[in-house]
Image 1 (spheres, helix red, strand yellow):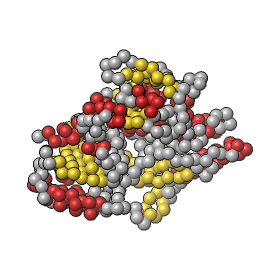
Image 2: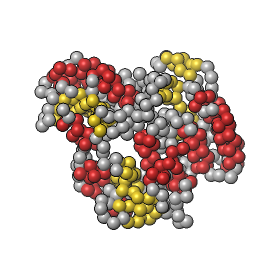
Image 3: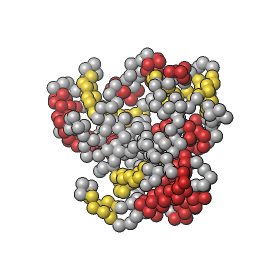
Image 4: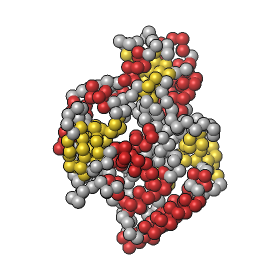
Length: 420
């Protein structure tokens, strides 16, 4: 089974529309979008087989009456709202299918450039700030009580129609980027008259405090939570940009494998990497194997095959196999977790994954001709038509809290090592 990596809310540069032709250009873009998504027939893709031209099951996912009503509303609003508001309405339209892979890439232009110099993240105990520009470093490590008077849960409910998601896990995973985007904050009335945004924050049991934050550059210099609290990053955060890597943990006799992308590293094919992992396994006493998929957003689900097959031939030597999952485990990475659970009797450890086990995938993108806005859609169904499970759940729950991060703990890895 294959599903391809979601680049949700990626930063792509869209060109501002010529002022004189703005309305006509937006109408042309919207027509282009609907025509391409609803295109019927098939086209042959030699690598992936036969795929649909447009969005598979388009009439089911975007029913005619609601779609027509949304398009009429959007058409009427084009002359009197900003480009950013039009983009938000397109995001809402695409998200209405409730398919996590169907999304609009967030542009840097079209009114979306300004950001708060804060970086949000959801933990098991709520929304927190895990990085910020130096002038707002006092906010790092604080829970967010409210933004302009609205609680994180209230804001999550307001953002939900604009974020393509299939469960609340992915909604929370995708929301932090929008929460620092000024065009979005302005849309929900969260900016003050001067453009600043007021947040109520709390660190631990200290009294709450208020901070007024001025928007600015989308990529400011920033300090991390680890820097501010002077803690070492846990093992799974040590090489987040690597496609994959492994380490033998001698103190617990654990073979740890982090698999961050379902793709071949141009510098080391996965089959060659798997050979190195299996050679390491063969040369050590192994009590357990841990495969970490928490940072894996997907790709080609077949890539992991050499490792899975090699482990299957060594089950008596490896001891139990544990697969670490979390909100960032998505698409093909979820497929891999399910396959390892099914075929190697692996135990899933951590937090629920971000997508539904059965859903739409095999993504394609289209670029709107005038705005250059990029829309992602799906051309294939994966899984069971009768399985409506909302999320892949861990066999051994291990929530990850803000306190764990500040203390440098990794509850999921600790749970896997101590499991019996």
